Every structure is written in C-alpha cells, then in structure tokens.
Amino acid sequence: MKSVGLSADHTAVDVAQPVSNSQQVTGSEAIIMSLLAEGVRRVFGYPGGAIMPTYDAMMDHEDRLQHVLMRHEQGAVHAAQGHARATGEVGVCIATSGPGATNLITGIADAYLDSTPLVCITGQVFAHLLGSDAFQEIDILDISMPVTKWNYKVTEAGEIPTALAKAFYLARSGRPGPVLIDITKNAQVDTLDFVYQSCDQVSSYEPNPTPSQQALLQAASLINAAKRPLVLFGQGVILGRAEAEFKAFAERIGAPLAATVLGLSALPTDHPQYVGMLGMHGNYAPNTLTNECDVLIAIGMRFDDRVTSNLAHYAKQAQVVHFEIDPSEINKNVRADVAVLGDVKQTLAAVMKRLDHRRHDRWLQRFAALHRTEQRLIIDADLQPATAAINMAEVIQCLNQQDPDAIIVTDVGQHQMVACRYRQFTHSRGLITSGGLGTMGFCLPAAIGAQFACPEQTVVGIVGDGGVQMTIQELGVMMQHQLPVKVIILNNQFLGMVRQWQELYFDRRYAATELHNPDFGILADGYGIANQCVSERQALPGAIQTMLQHPGAYVLEVRVAQQDNVFPIITPGASVADMCLGVEAAVEADAEQSTNEGVKDHDHNP
Image 1 (tube, rainbow, N blue to C red):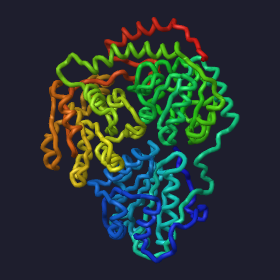
Image 2 (cartoon, rainbow, N blue to C red; image 1 turned 60 degrees about the vertical axis):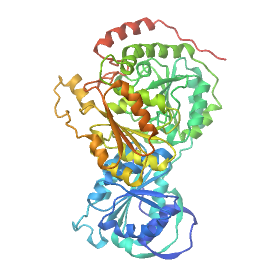
Image 3 (cartoon, helix red, strand yellow; image 1 turned 135 degrees about the vertical axis):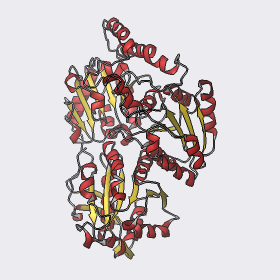
Image 4 (cartoon, rainbow, N blue to C red; image 1 turned 90 degrees about the vertical axis):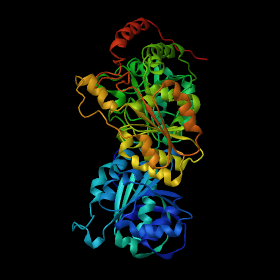
C-alpha cells in the first residue's frame, strides 16, 4: 500500500456542517471533543509527560470516553487493532513522545501491512524545543512515514479539529490504514475556538475508484468462458463489508473458492465450494491447482509472496482477473489481464449482472481428490496422532466442537498456521491475526481489544509460549477490567516455527530456539486469573469446557509435542504446485497426483 502523500494544507479538505457551535477550549479538550464527534467511545493508551494535558482533559469526559490503560504502548496499538478488526471501525491509541511514540511503531507497521484503520495520537515536546534534542523528543513523523497512510505534526491548537477530521477520514476510507497525528505540548495547552467539521474529501485522494464498464465486461467474459476458474479471496471482502455480495458472486459462477490467511472467515468454511487456505502452510489442493486453472479470479487480495511463492512459476497458464480497491496493487506482483478497480462491494454487485450461472463439478472434484490425499497423509495424523503427546491441531479441533462461533485471535508461529488450517469459521471477522508483518506479541493485546469491542462474544487467544512472553504483562489489563478473555498457550518449549525451519533447511542446528519457560500458572495466579495446565489427551476436552464455561478470564496451558512440524509446506523458492507434505508423504502424494491427471474437466450450465 502506498502512502497517500497528501499535503498538510488543510484548505484542501472539503468539510460537512459543524457538529458544534464555536466555543473556547484548550487543545487537549479539542482532542477529546474531536474523538467524541467521530463516534469514538474507547481509546487505548499509556500516559507520559508530553501527552499529560490530554489525559487531564480526558477525565472530564470519562462518562463518554473510556480510556484503557495498557501495560506497554505496543499493547495499546495492538489492542486498538483488535478493536478495529473486530468491528470494522477506526481504532484509536494514544502515547507520549519519545519512547512512547517509538513503542507504537511495530503495531503501526502491522496495521499498515494488514490494512487496519487506526488513528494514533502522540504527544510531542513544546514547539519551540523541536529540533533541540529535548528530553523525550523524537521525530516520529519521519520514523512513521513509511508505515502510515498519512501523518502530521500539529504545532498550534487551532489545527487540532481539522487534523483529526482528516485523520479519521483517511484511516477509514478506501483501503484502510493507520494515520498518526503528533501534537506538541503547547498546542495541547493553548486555546482555540472549537468547531468540528467532519471530513469527506481530500484533494488528489480518490479512495474509491470508479470501475471501468469495459473492465467489468471483460471480466465477465473471461469468467463466463472459464473451464477451470479458481477464486482467491482476501481481507478486502471483509474490509469492504462485501461478504453477501461475494457469496452471491461465488455461487453464481460455481467456482472453487480459496482464502488467504486474512481472508479466512469471509465465507463459512463449510461452504460446498470452499476448497481451503492458500499459502506456504495452506491446503494442498488450492495451492497445487493454482497452476492448472485457466482463469484466476483474485478478489481483495494482493498476491503476497507467502501466497505466490516463486512468481516465475505462478499461474503462468491462467488469465488473471483482479478485483482490487488499491491501484498500487495492480500488476505489482502478478500481471492482471483484467483489473477491476473499486470497492469490491460495488464491483462484485456490478459484474454479477453480466455473469452466467455456471457449475464446475468435475473441476471441483479435482480439489476433492487432492484434499483426500492431504486428509490421509496430513490431516488425520494431525487430528488423531499415534503419539502420546498432544498435537496443536487437536486443541483447535476440540475448540471447534465446543465453541464454533468464538472469535479467534492468534499470535504468530506454528500455532497460528495450525489455527488457520483447522479452525472452522462460521461468521465474518471470526479470525484476528497478524498477517503481513507477522508480529509476535500480537495476540494478548489484540484479544483484549476484540473483547472490549464484542463484550457478548467469546474471544479466545491462541498463542505460543514464545509470543505470549512478549506482551504477557497485558494480563494486568484483563485483571483490572475483569475481561473474560480466554487464552490458550500452546507450549512446545521452542520457538516452533523457527525450529521447524532449522530442522528442514539448516541441518537441525537449533540455534537459540529452545525455551526455558516460567510456570505460566503461577504467573496467571499473580494476576488473579483462573488457570490450569494439561498434558494428557484425555484431559483436553474437559479443560476446554472448563475454560469456556468460566465467567472471567482464563489461561489454559496445553503442553504439546515439542518437535512437531506444520505440513504441508511450500519450500521457499519453490512453485506453489510443489508443496511438500512431509518426507514420507511426498512419494505417495506424487503417485496419487499422477492418477488424477487423466480426469477431464467439463462445465455444466443449469
């Protein structure tokens, strides 16, 4: 995603009618009133010297604006992400200058790569001290510029309402993303005549391109003529709130449907056309048959390298139709024969008028056959292992059986890939995970944000023993606010994904990946959070049930196999068609693949 690159000249902003009459307020009060005018009811943050006036002003509005004190600024931005991802609304976080601001950067970068709408507000030293290396001064604008849609430094109180109106508009419009507003201390304490005008247009910024009628016609023509179409859908379906339009489109064309990691949950996994997850640890059939489809239909996804692997060997036989809102993603990685620019909610509805009803039963049977191979060689062994140790997949399956509707928030690593592979999703926004940046430490604070956003829903954090220790202090927020977040720590006493790569590609030289962990139960006890630890398979269902039925927060540590691997895997640099199912499984899979190559494909038109 490219930065918008907008001028700081606020005269470029067209605004709606004021939402309040002019009144004299401090800059700090203007910040709070602007947030309230945008409908914000909750912010996540951590106070400090340069933002203290704003925290003082916040106390006068505690009945309308809740502040959640996180235990680290990284936790604040991840919590804002979780809140935004669960609701689709703009998340807000606040931090002070210097280290407070720099501690936000990892989460801002995560939000940027995953198109999460955020407004991040940082305090800054007095304007007259800028550039003097004052205490806790840092140029957060230059630091954050590569990972924000827009950023701006406010040095005068009168700029605050316009800057924040513009920030919210840019964060939520078009392809969403994070925006940062840095506000000097003098701007917070000086006064202004406050009038808030919402922003709905910025010069040179076109968030929703108008789709070309010619592109719609060409896309429909290719899709109607396809013999072996394959649909790849990503988070753009969710961000565009286009789940219903996507489902109708998919059922009209009758094609196999495969999800990116961030696209998971846009469509229920039990849909008859759903054929699995794409990517390095995705499902065998959609990855392999990407290189056999004749028309590849990409919807709200960006052809990330974890999906395409070696671009020189990616879908070269296919014509590509790309539905995408961000022009910078078109032809960036994969050349599109037809690019349909625009909001997918609108473009899918528009192209539907031109599509024939189709069925591709024999083509879908090819996916089913390869899925049976994966089922026999990988999935059955994951879900019903012969070993005494519990597998991660068993935990996810047990959760499926007991609460299929819970919102799942994952950290990053083997447990993430296992959760994505085996979780059965029943509703949109059922998965919150770090995709593009792959941020360890994401799970706990993001789960907190999601639970605040969805107090009536069960939120389950799935985290490894490595990632949980990066932000484990956020258990204090769960304790303080009595949040009923459920946390499952899958403990294999390793940095599991790194260890797997060391086993496969570094001659089993396990450099710096073995973990000597604390007693997670004692840590949970310290925060007053109920907990238990299981290592026996027969105890797992009861432990999951106890966790889910507990009215408050719960930490369940599951001791899983130490050196288990996640398969299939696309070896880095290999073609998507060359998935490795494990050393022993690969030979048998190759033999079965050859028996399926003779199946001829026929289209069926009802």
